[in-house]
Image (cartoon, rainbow, N blue to C red; front, side, top):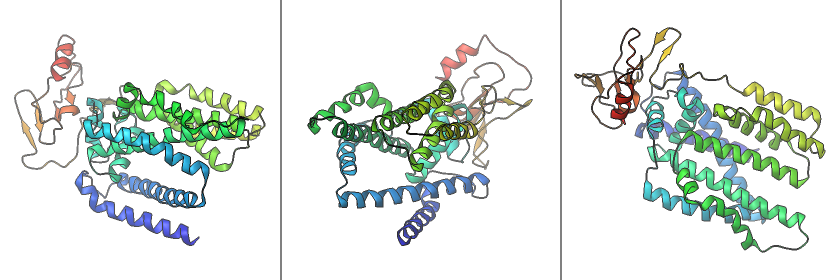
Length: 364
């Protein structure tokens, strides 16, 4: 209890320090509900990180095999990723990622890339308040997952095989993750990067539990619920996990690692926590038409003298990410481009299909 209280105090102190470090990147209003929501989530993550670090040190001192193997396999892969990140710093960004990053400064979600992506960006930036901090946190998480793959494979081989296997052979687990496309994809803060590794970790964890042959505890069930919810909802293409998760849990139930009631409860929790679908029209990155109204973002930071200036082809804001000139309209009713900080509201159904392709190529 004393250790837990000390860890909680450290997390609260860390959260308080972010009130000052957030000024390095964020431009939010602390009186909004989003501020308190994200600070509460940061406090939970900070406590989990402090608790995990203390527990890891204790296990390393006690000579825990899995902890030592995890560290031994994580650090080399992390070193490779950090070298590549240093070369491409602050990472490999796309236009959609820059739009999410721009709205994250004011704690606004970008539903086009799913609000989970905005949440991941905002919380990562609270830990490391710079654009490259998102990619750095992403590299740390991915390296830890790969280290978990190799350490678990070594543990399973030791328990299931009669003949011992040299630890060097488990370096083969690295090979798929050392391919250039995988390494470069790790440096990209795309929604697909976050969701793909979430899916991979979920499937791997279920397979490892099946091969291990021991009953699942409460922490493992909670991890399945969280990862299953994220995997099924982060991208609409992954909705098939709503059918895959019960099937995978049924396989564990067939080996008597889970009770049928537990399978139903876990599946129900995943379904309950699954957010509703985001329609394309309502999730336009520039605000788009919603409910008969048109909203044009960004709304924050607050307008000040000299912040917005009118030009011939649109309205150019001083908060532009690219510092580029006004961007041509893309056609249709969407006369906005958050990517380059330009928005040009147009009233009425002025569809301009002829100029849509020209505007998009010119914008890029």
